[in-house]
Image 1 (cartoon, rainbow, N blue to C red):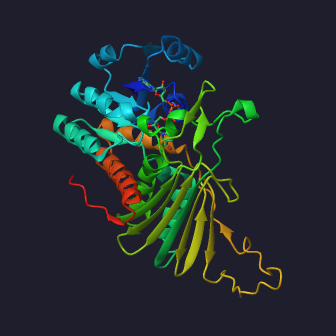
Image 2 (tube, rainbow, N blue to C red):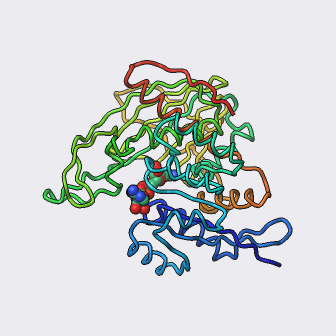
Image 3 (cartoon, protein in one colour):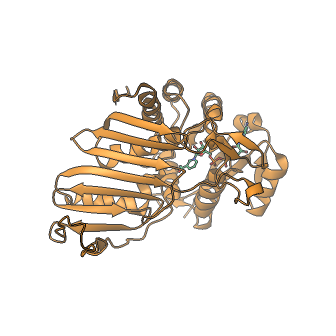
Length: 385
Ligand SMILES: NC(=O)c1ccc[n+]([C@@H]2O[C@H](COP(=O)([O-])OP(=O)(O)OC[C@H]3O[C@@H](n4cnc5c(N)ncnc54)[C@H](O)[C@@H]3O)[C@@H](O)[C@H]2O)c1
């Protein structure tokens, strides 16, 4: 068996997503397992080059994880022979960075959203197509065990005709006011500043776009109401700032095929549900509720028959009569998508989760924000491939 090295310039890996999900849980995990095995038995071995502004931070990260190569010189990295450029830095920087990498002939892989505007997202797709480089955008939720179970149920026809899909996403993100003994915020402060690419509509509607498109039907129209429930927060340095971005979104979608979807997304809710994200699907023949990993079904035969009577304690335990879908052994969602991308780069297998799909996510977010501003339903036009 032979090894084939594949060089990846990794930018933004000192951040939350870049470090945990992409460097540690994906690229280093792939290295540890001995690479990605190709059909002919060759093992494709990713070789990361970590790039960041702060030499001390990048060096420390590289040393801690035994990564040989790191630099603060992005231009030199782009001039070098590595085939792939990956970016997980904050969203607003992304279009410029990707443009540079495309111009340098690199294949592109990046976090979502690909940009903060549809115009930029379309421009990136056009540039990548013109340069004939391969491209991929993270759509991690598609490989979450809970969602894979939902997809399988749908393929098996378990739901009958799907009527509606309801998503509940969110948890309390602490404001971070140390003077009032609050714990520090568990998300970066730029997420709450519109001028820095923050906002839950931009962040989450691009996820809901690919989840809905792939599992339940293409999104055709959107109505979205946003809110900034928490007006002030405290940043990484303990400094108070004004939250200028939306921290909650109440969005309804009409899908091709007639399914109605409604997703609540909020960083100002307390969780009393199975998981931080739950997706509840109701069909004529059965229903299912998926969290990130687990999924429960209720068939027609298992459906209880409630009768409205507020004068007696509820006689039915509605958490009974649900059957858990068994696990089939799933890998980390980010890693699974990375492996597919790496295979695609060396010509093995298609990869349809590219910059056009990324642009569709930004399109829905942009329309969601517009719908909120204009207080009306908006159609989602098809994007040209
Ligand atoms: N797929 C998902 O589920 C998911 C979840 C969270 C975030 N994200 C996306 O990942 C990206 C990063 O989010 P995060 O939560 O990790 O943010 P973060 O703030 O933790 O990390 C941002 C990274 O960008 C770097 N950076 C910031 N400004 C820079 C500059 N001017 N030049 C060079 N580097 C700079 C930081 O040093 C850091 O490494 C965002 O686009 C976000 O939308 C995706």
